[in-house]
Image (cartoon, rainbow, N blue to C red; front, top):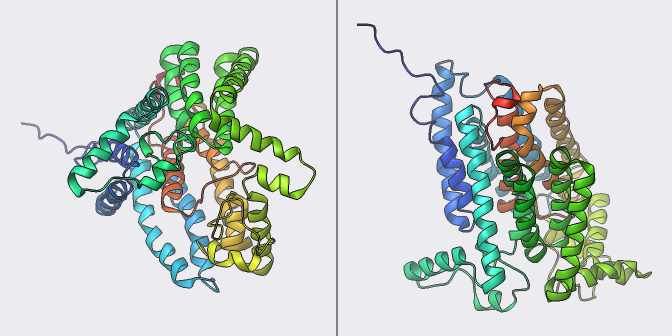
Length: 444
């Protein structure tokens, strides 16, 4: 009897669940503690699994190029943290962030391996599209009836277990936009959906054509307008532009943007929250600095402080997560009540200024080096690889688009999301399989 050959590394037990592990991490974002636990356990398992595969010569887990790009992108994010510890305004906090963030590297290898073959790519990107669709429908229900069913269920479960709600009464009372499944104490639903929307839009376009793309774009667009900040509006506009022009052509895409403008005008009339954000934006036309700062929700004052920090610590910055401690010493309007209320600004709200102020020119150069490597990999990839990686590439590109305002990239939530997108990009672009574009799965 001929013995059965051992399974290939890609088929060996322990890696078939990798896509599901990644999806569990994303699906648990409304419960940050559980999501963090999934990520840490996945990282530990990935270390063992990857070392075992490497000792057996298991290059089938990831191509050498995918290993390299994933590691380089992590290094471009993490090394600035390490260098920023020297001379940091809060060295303990900066050092702790650098040490703790090492956990991301094995998890990013896991994420990249999850999309490195046909099956994993189909499950992972398809699952991402489903998660975005479910969160969008849930937020639409909240917009109609005032309650997110998903968040209501999570909150009820937490109260049953711990006797405490997920959000305080003060958070609920201060709610000024849709919270969706993330709830009123984590008002990031708009920017999260905007960044993740390429997974849903590409899936809808491939499966249902132009009509599917338009329906998905309209549903997500309503939530981004109602739940998002103006930064998420810019992010989503970029997604529509770059995902729609190849499918619809420029003429029909212009009609989509015209319909979006009409929808925004209607929501400005009927939604006080949208009307307030549009009115605040109009204040930018004011000739004085206070009008511009009010229009930018205090960002002009924060950016002035960031520039000051860059001037005082140009080489390696004030230290990761040290912005809040260094703010008072660089506040250009010290003594005046800021637009955002009491207390210092927590971060620079803009990727270039955050990286430059907290990690200096050295950190900024490392980020640019990572971006250059990501672009070089895209430039030299073949058409099939680009087609596989297009959703992750667009999601990553719009998330770090520099001509916008941003959440803190060195925070646990937004940093984890950004690194996840980077690993999905590296793994799907440089996976270990090659196939023609027409063979790509519907969610690629």
